[in-house]
Image (cartoon, rainbow, N blue to C red; front, side):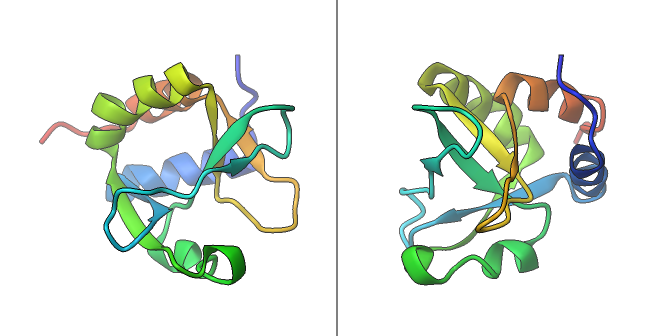
Length: 120
C-alpha cells in the first residue's frame, strides 16, 4: 500500500479539480519523456505534473524539444495504467529536477485517482 504523502495528496486534489494532468511529449505527441527512476534501480519513471505551468518549466536542457501534453484522467485510467504497469514504469508526481521526487506505482496511483474521477 502506498503511503499518503503531502505531494500525493496535493496532486490528487488538483487532478480532482481539472480531471487531467500533464506530461512532456515531443511535437508529434508520440514520444513522451521517460527517465531513470530516482528511487528504484533499473526502473524508468514517467514525470507528470498537475498543472501545465509546472510541466512547462521542465521544457529545458535535455527536455528542450518537448512540450506539455495533457493526459486526461479518463485516458490515464483506460490506456496508460496497464501500459505503464506492463513496462514496469513508475509515475513521478509533480516531478522536480535535481531533487528526490515522489514516484508511485501506476496501479496505486490509479486507485487514488479512481476516488476522484468524475463520470462524463
